[in-house]
Amino acid sequence: VVLNHGAAKKNVLWNWDGYGPDNCGGIYFEGQKDTPWGKRFSFHKAEVQDYLKQACRTWIEEYGVDGLRFDSVHNMPWGLLQNMTHELKEHYPDKILIAEITPENPKVISDAGFHSCWVHATHFDSLKIMKKSDGGDDPSKKMGMLKNMVMPHGFPNIGGVHSVLGSHDQIGDRQDGNEDGKSHRYYISRLGGKGNWHGRAQCRAWFAFQNCCRGLPMTFMGSETLQEGWWHVDQHHRFNWGLAEGDDVHSAEMRRLVTASNKLRVAAPGLIQDDVRFVHEDAGSAVLGFIRGSSPEEACLCILHLGEQQWENGGYGLNTGWGGGTSWRLALNSQAAEFGGFEGSAKDEVQADGGGKIFISIPKWSCLIYRPS
Image (tube, rainbow, N blue to C red; front, side):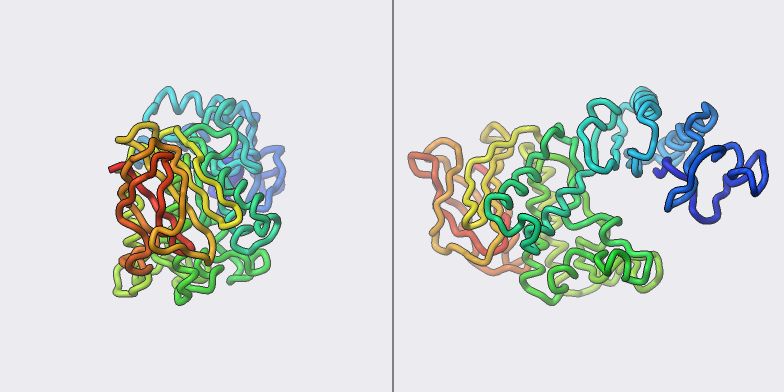
């Protein structure tokens, strides 16, 4: 829901119920400033506040939505946000309330009352790593970025909403592909396009990794089908149903990875719990290992590798932080042949030595998930 301003075009509330064309748009906008997206609402008026609250209730009661994502709440009065979230939680305790705030701030949860907050840094830090810029080429800084994606600082379990492959803000383009220096693109187009093997592997690894992170994963339509270019509502750039329903091989591989990763997130309790424990950090080789979940029935050992090097025939030793002698079974491999990778890229089952270390194969540009067997 966009409650921080009125519509920029065809604003049906303009001059509604009073005033004229030279009087600031009437009772809903009286005394407010313009924004690049439309006139700000008159937030100080109780009637306008009630109207905005009723708009939220309409989406919930008449359309049956599971929750609401609030646009740009840093451009709304903090007290109004507190009052609005309190009332919505009271009336609809099973609905999730997500805030977009720039820069992201945990106080939007702890003080303003939202359940979750968009974490923009996840996407932009991933680009720094891929482009090797702004610290992304420094092994230790890169490891720090990845760890903050896994466990966003200051945010509770579902507090962070990740969109590592980009949201409408980074993929949508209203200027025929030229917005912000032609930077608005689907992630695959930033990595060489759907025909690029490395680009496809990297998209799969990032998606699987995102589903391992603490928080809520979010995917913008078209990312799961490897749609290219930019998104817009026109017929040439809207969602391409041909990729979703057709026989494009690479799109089908990505969709299978997305399906398998999502199913694992549902089936593995550890991936949605609060527990995160970093057990292996190899900054030089760009390998990060962490445990989600606290018991053998719940635990997932998540391993991300972002680099060209690969280890075959169990050639990489990785600390599990778990008891010695534990057997680990492969639950997901983003480089599996069915997803567009290759046969034998990872070991199906391994057993830890007395110190809890396992010796595994790690393919280039991959995310592996093991569970105790």
